[in-house]
Length: 122
Image (tube, rainbow, N blue to C red):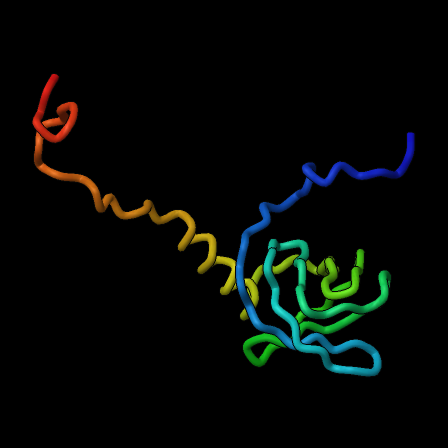
């Protein structure tokens, strides 16, 4: 059996977010945006570092440590060695999940009886 891991078999639910962060590599600081976040990792657009390198994610005056799992020209995926359980990124994740659970407004709901067409033919 090979070492391929099924990407749908993740331990944490990924949540779409838009969080501006600064990523600190060994030699430089790079601005990026987290677009996908879970307790175990994140996708960061606009920043790229070599795979298997370690970095720090600066957000909300706090630092979260990460390891680059994959990297492309303008984005990368990172894994957190310690799951997010508290802090600024965890709070942003909770807010994003709570916002996604709100039902959309039912703006077309009216008091009229449901009928066919403008004239009410049935």
